[in-house]
Image (cartoon, rainbow, N blue to C red; front, side, top):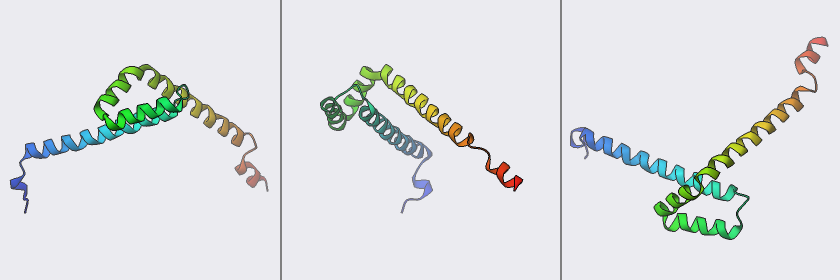
Length: 108
């Protein structure tokens, strides 16, 4: 049975470091794969090659993708955020322009 005295503090720190490194690694994989599938300037063949490269040679594939596309990743993310904000603003304007529900209830 593993007791606290059998598991020194530095091993706990090392285990936590390894765990969070795996979490960050999977987060990067998901972010890169979502960026690959979100791209509109790339055809299906190139997307397939990038996915295979990232899946079969993960460390090299991720590093090469980040080096090759580091500027365009940020630009696409900013463009998507601006589009989402614009859609939210339009939705809020369309909902708020029809008159207030509180005003119609208070007058009746």
